[in-house]
Length: 199
Image 1 (cartoon, one colour):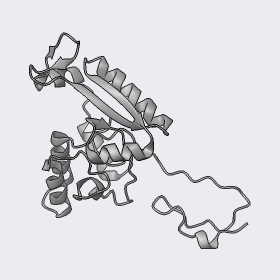
Image 2 (cartoon, rainbow, N blue to C red; image 1 turned 180 degrees about the vertical axis):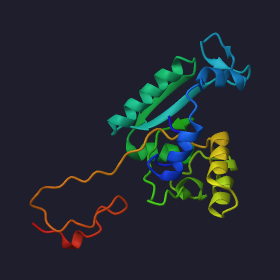
Image 3 (spheres, helix red, strand yellow; image 1 turned 90 degrees about the vertical axis):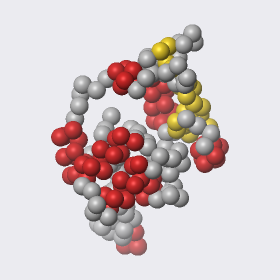
Image 4 (cartoon, rainbow, N blue to C red; image 1 turned 180 degrees about the horizontal axis):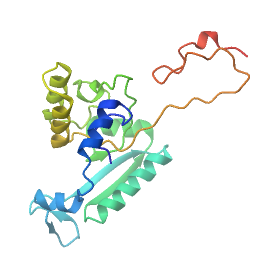
């Protein structure tokens, strides 16, 4: 798992990852440290009041996300955290997320080349569903305003952890050799010069 919400090839994120790597972090120790040190008669971890019995949503038409959800449920199950995975058609998934009918969900967003996180922290951002705690959002806006350095924002983000970055994907363009004129495409705009493409 990564320690930042940014693509690790971005220099500030890469430097933070390198300087703050902690291979000794143990999920069981972390759960017990925050009070989830009991197992109820159903085999579910709890703190005496709250049981970690969670519902995770995932869209049904993406094999990668479905497999990721199953792996997350399996890994958390080994820690006595019960995760029920619900797969839904895309429209139903989006509706359930918008209505807050989840404990966890697997989503996906494409960040702009400047790694802007307004989709999460912009109030009505496209990926703001489920992000209720303002600590990370306030820290992010403070970082953008120059009121705090990158490392301070990351410390606030990791303390609040409004979402868990799972992985990053790199944009890939496939073409055929007969296509001419596609010279200006870049990660932020794969179709930058589409008007010049020809066979």
